[in-house]
Length: 260
Ligand code: R5P
Image (cartoon, rainbow, N blue to C red; front, side):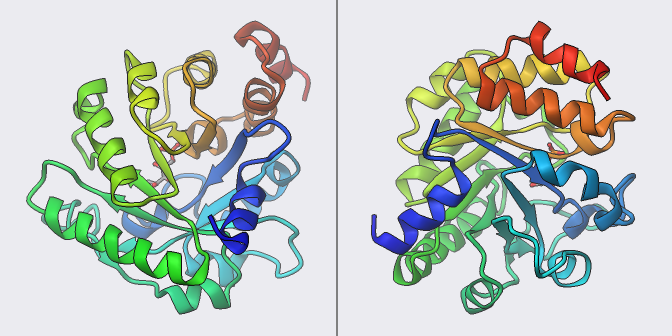
């Protein structure tokens, strides 16, 4: 890995423990103004001190994020789909590598839809993005998207997606936690982070998810809704951070939910 690529990666995955707490706020690119992201700046303000990096689109970056913010970000460059459209899997690259460099992104993020009618399109786009990333020293995060088919989230499918993403050259992969998650991580030669998915029933469920993922080899989280849709968003991110960077147990982390 060349110096620039390595330097960008080390801003995202902290070298002191090789772990990462990323806050995902890119959902609007296909879901529109979902609950608690109507005003992203307001939602993330109290969460910033506990966040290693943001994941977002250029629109939210330019309009809602202070240029003085000393925090790396992963730029969502794929989309062209919407929750109202015919196929969530129909994504392409809408934000150029030149733009990612101009904005000072630390990585670009792209969703792949393995097993769908747009598998080939999204995998070839990922390959092209990696080619450009190699040229400019820009890491590529591949997101193993499932669209509305949340039931797809099992080790066999996610293991397939993560491995393909790594084989095509992605420097990191974002996927979902699942039973036998260890198998997914062990067969993926690049760092794996987990998304949280739709909001779970309880805060404890989200902490359990993050804890299990870290125990089974994830290097961190790139979570959104289970943090900022929580009525105790600051407590949630503090607790998640303790699990990721402090190796806290679920019980220890849960104490931080109460310490507002
Ligand atoms: C999809 O909407 C985005 O890629 C999100 O960044 C990803 O799903 C993580 O957010 P959450 O934890 O809310 O699933």
